[in-house]
Image (cartoon, rainbow over all chains, first blue to last red; front, side, top):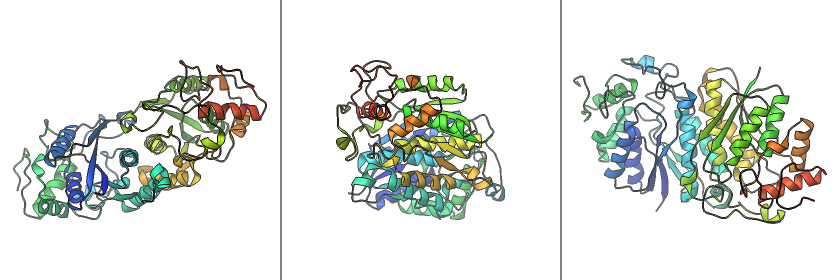
Length: 231
Length: 231
């Protein structure tokens, strides 16, 4: 069975990626991070997703990125609310965490090496939300090139490392459609950057708005409970 | 003043790199890691080195790589002793920590982004000890390419990121010669993988043997106290 390491935040995207990887026949080890995020409830969602798919091999690492002190996700900076799509897609938002995907992928690379896995799955997405530099296809390609040189397996084993980012060119609505067709239960996922309470999404941050729009576009209902009535 | 992030282990190599970076006029922020290494005394050495150069901006991050469970530096695996140079340079040694430099450089990249620094210094060395895949020039080049795409500064600022590895093609003896010419005090550095006690090098692991050989080749005396009499 092909082995893979999958970065699971417990959100809509990474959960859909997990459904895709399992559908493609990979044996998956999961990796999640407590990195000082305000929405650390997502780790509870990640555990629920792991349980749902009966995956026992789930590493949850505690790495504090708060020392960087520069993101609305980890610091005393307000998470933007009620923005329109045009604002979301212009420039890099304050919710950007410096080099986060590079740090996450580096740990995945280490775990891949230990497990003898040659596949890493990540749920980055360049279309709906183009402001994050480390979500672009050219970035993922460059990480893959680096990763192929970085590890023991790359040097000793007759295998090539692949970074899979199956959602990278999908719209949020396409991601949800794909997930639903693979039986994803989105009621156990968590997306909100700034929850009102544990597991209660605000419905108004960029992440919630994009998620809601995605469901709306395919005339599906988001199973999460938002404070405002959904359309 | 040009800003740089420098990965400081407290060892001979990274301390020499610090002397080089300061000599080249960089304003340096230091980054060190407690990653579960048996020789965590090196962090005390890193602090002493930071003090020596009067650098206050020193981040010491606690990131446990022990979960990977596969290196003699972090796990219940014996550190090899008394090996000859031929054995050291054939294959990847058990002291190799999976993707360690990639993880360290990723954090450096994050800090570089926050500080608006476009230079990262790392003391990797490909000649004396060629077994580590993430010490090769092609690896460093690939990380630099990836780093240039990974961050906000890469996208927004009119600057290019450089990963500096000034020791990469030097022999250990050349490194020491360079350091001595720049006034490095090697008595406060720590190199041993498996110290007998806090700050007491074993004199017999690969790291000690390479260090001792380096001093010997330039007829200099290593100021550390080893159990055996030095030549």
